Amino acid sequence: MTKFTSIFCSLLVLSPVTAKDPIRIGLIGLDTSHVTAFTKIINDETAKDHVKGAKVVAAFKGGSPDIKSSISRVDGYTKTLEKDFGVEICQTIEELCGKVDAVMIESVDGRPHLSQARPVIAAGLPLFLDKPVAGSLSDTLKIYQLAKKAGVPIFSSSSLRYGESTQAVRGGSIGKITYARCSSPAKIEPHHPDLFWYGVHGCESLFTVMG
Image (cartoon, rainbow, N blue to C red):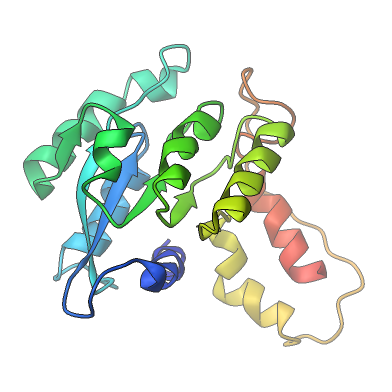
């Protein structure tokens, strides 16, 4: 996760801030443990593998009432961000965009990602999309089309793509790869097609190794 966060932060050099200013990051969708984990790594200078030069300053709550793992956790993570990290909770995504230099869409539900990404892209802010990148292939393609048209940097990936052993194998540590077999969690969520919900980790590991 730390390498993943560092890679995202490296994209933020395109943000319109001076070298002495911390890059202000906004979070959208506070229904996953990623929001507190990423915020700690970015905001807490004493945290292991702290990422320097940025700070999570604002967030939009979000949440999906028809997904239990979303609605049952969003209030708790929102309170943690407010109380432990002093993150400002905004009432709209448009309000959030006016307070930050870059955005991380963390909503565990991929379905709202397109609607959440639209105002971010319109504001010209660098954007990271956590898994699943969207709730459908058509939404995914639309997000990237909008970002390309607007010239907005955008990034999404499984953290396992950047795992030490995965990168070593990709780099030729055991020679040319002609066959690979991968196992990973791939829970099916009824509102998401196929392996969208969690299968990205295994799929990206295979793509990384096999090319």
